[in-house]
Image (cartoon, rainbow, N blue to C red; front, side):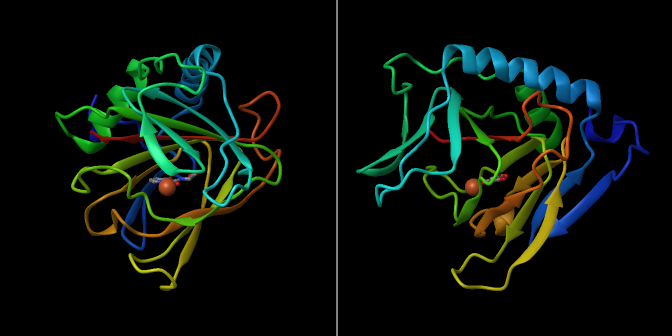
Length: 212
Ligand code: MD6
Ligand code: FE
């Protein structure tokens, strides 16, 4: 299926641009969202979520895990991609449904080699940051929102630049690429309990990247 073959007329569907970041609102319907949650459940069963610690030694408010060749880890030494979960086991493969979504949205032959899964519980947030630990910034980062609404803030490629915010809803897909690839971005807050998708509430964000 190509992007243009998607049924239109879903609530809140359409593409919105926020400081160069493209947000495909309502791209994923309820069944596809539920199927993705099942895929992620299988990943988490093999690679349990953990709470990363920032380079300043502070616990982050999100929990995370990964799939693919490289997973994202943090600690005293800073942030880095690792081929293994903290348990020592390799990360599970990236679910095929996510690879298909990457192909559909980006149109790229090259597959992502990293899939980061973040879970936002009540009160969790993510400070403004750039995604700059990948080798080649010509590849985009694709992000999928599942569960509760989140206030996504996007700035420019310089710290302290003007920012714009947009609410991301379950089923929205965002692409950080092109001139916006190194834009500062973050999640100010989530609207806990705004979605029924996840049984205990909260929000899952999945980002697909080419790391190696
Ligand atoms: C989030 N997202 O949506 C946090 N990074 O929960 C990110 O940090 C992010 O959405 C790179 C590309 C897209 C993103
Ligand atoms: Fe990011």
